[in-house]
Image (tube, rainbow, N blue to C red):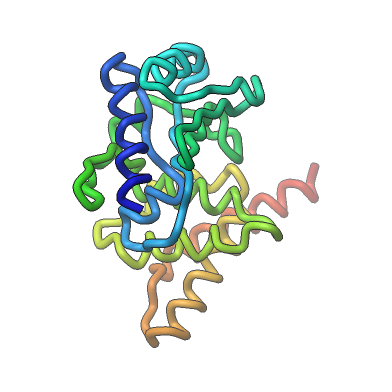
Length: 208
């Protein structure tokens, strides 16, 4: 894994050298927040207007590149490592100044990476979950369990993206954590607030 991390760092250094904005998310970010699992790629969230410059920067660092899908993702590779360059993630999330301001720095083994904040990582994992990706909610759960200063109010502000999915995840996180530890993880007022929002939305749709 250290060899892969060295290649991942080579990729982020190439973007840093060109002053291209990005944050690391996906499996490496989950690793930074405490859940280590095997991965052969690194997900970088970039701005769409920087996509071609990002490919050029990576080519200069000896990566092969591919304009995979102009709507949301380009890719790069070196040896067995893959770099996913995502400019429109699930739920329509894009890199913003707010996300850049909230980023955190983590040292993984011997390498320092710019990692997306825990709240937006959880949002991405909530939105990405589907039948073929059951681990996403467990990834998000691990982030909640390992982040002592988690900003619940910020998370709730993101919930309008899909209130029912957010609420479902919070019930999952609460039930799973209580089953494993006997303790509550999600503050009750957070679930109550989100459930009230959902009920109000249901009532409004019936009136309409």
